[in-house]
Length: 387
Ligand code: NAD
Ligand code: ZN
Ligand code: ZN
Image 1 (tube, rainbow, N blue to C red):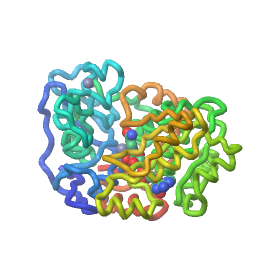
Image 2: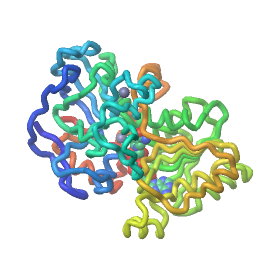
Image 3: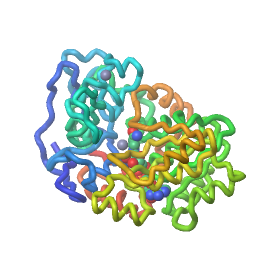
Image 4: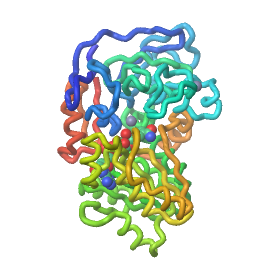
């Protein structure tokens, strides 16, 4: 089959690789009908995630049709259309019982990205197509995928909804949703979203749905800011022109917003010192957006961090966070938990995640898709690939 494979920083190729097959009794084999490129894939693409090996198949946002099912699969049948959560969870361990699927302690033989490993520490869940820190499981930017734990992950989609409307249930929609739930957004809330990429846009959509009154959105890509303003009524702030937290404080009586959402993560632009430090490997992540979030949030407010971090940052103002009595919430998304309610919201039109799609390409052109999305060419917001 054809799949998108890694060969080094900014070198990905669609190649012929061996077909996957069923290994465990509760596996399915999925024929992929649609898959997307995520901002998290860009961290892999930049060669920034350790334990990414030549030939690894990327892709963790995908859906398709069940082609074959192992003898232990009871929850889906051959021919079903399903969306696959990017988190692989067993459904019955300590963390799965708590619905904290991204912490599933049974699916990942590796240790995750923690720098302070403890022999006794439980690993995070395995993820599709996300390095050997997260299980080394081949991803879904491919014609076929082996899906483990098929009685827990695959989510059946009613025939009436086409792929583009439901594909983002695999990752960015529940990620935006968990980010606003963690931020405790409700009617009348004010929120500042840093990053107007797909995750920032899904956060804005979910914040609107839950009744937020004022949504600020921060980026330096004018076309992304314009889209967020036009689609979600967000107030755009261009951080290349103004200091973003200053601008937000000015518009909120000096108090700040109820909550900030960091939808950028560790490759944040904007701090020359940190760009140099991470190049010299004196730090692994840029703390630029975390600092802005802490500064833009009111006393007693919440900083919610869906953006991915790895390792350590300098200049983390814990004292400011303490002084303001902030709550910090973060982590990978517990995708499985949110799917029924998000599907309802799509079905009744409260959410239309597909409006952010700007590029539709064949899987064969996936390498160009990475380049366009990464370099923000052609006003790219989100790329969907079809085999
Ligand atoms: P993206 O790269 O398309 O978007 C990031 C946006 O942030 C870009 O538009 C960029 O211009 C902007 N940006 C860069 N520096 C900034 C700064 N200093 N201030 C404000 N904006 C800045 O990616 P995406 O798909 O939207 O993903 C965003 C983050 O969310 C990534 O780190 C990704 O890995 C992470 N993510 C996490 C989860 C999860 O489970 N927690 C799931 C999906 C994605
Ligand atoms: Zn993702
Ligand atoms: Zn589990």
